[in-house]
Image 1 (cartoon, rainbow, N blue to C red):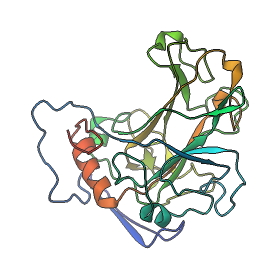
Image 2 (cartoon, helix red, strand yellow):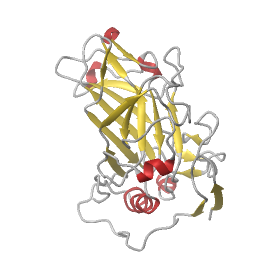
Image 3 (spheres, one colour):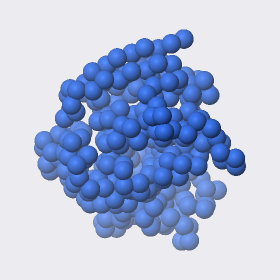
Image 4 (cartoon, helix red, strand yellow):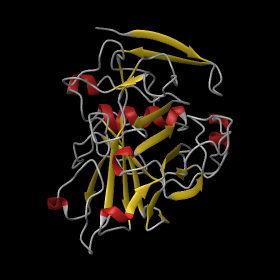
Length: 291
């Protein structure tokens, strides 16, 4: 069935913007590859490697215009993010991502061991087509420019259904992944995995709780309230930390309060190209958006 939706957004520092969905089409640049190269790995994926940039007690999604109002955050990607940042600031500022075309900002609560801030040494942000049926994946649309999402629960008081993040040990997954910090062997590192929702309501670039405009799929499909499938953002952080988990904390609290913020500033044409090629055609792409 053809889905034809037009939405306009002028809030959140974004200029007038129009979104159209036409079945599996959308707007695909004519330069897009349309065939799958021989030997391509059939996984719907593209990625960005974005190292640690800086720390600030700021959150331009939850506390916009209020520098210093948040707990400490560690920022990745855009090097200019602060409490006053708009999407235009991101688009016009430098980024440490590979690819450099990704001007997005990603941030998480800062992790401490024995009271000393520890930043991840491996930081990868995957954009995936998994979690939905092939039919839904083939209709995946680009994440809209200026989209803001918070995933996880910074206010969790115990591991529960709201704890989206999980912790594991690099090369030692047999140690047991969990929703709270775990004890990693001396030859390992503590890993954090966090999946963002991949169903959009097709209308809002943000919401009052920074979550309600997005939803997770159910039984491989997007709910009727959030009918637009977009790539799943998976945040993978690896910290040079191991040993007794009682020595570790986040600026937001225990391990189960891990959460992530995403402020999308990918150029729309580049996001369109990667979604059409890597996600819809189901091709595992590198940082350059190619097989």
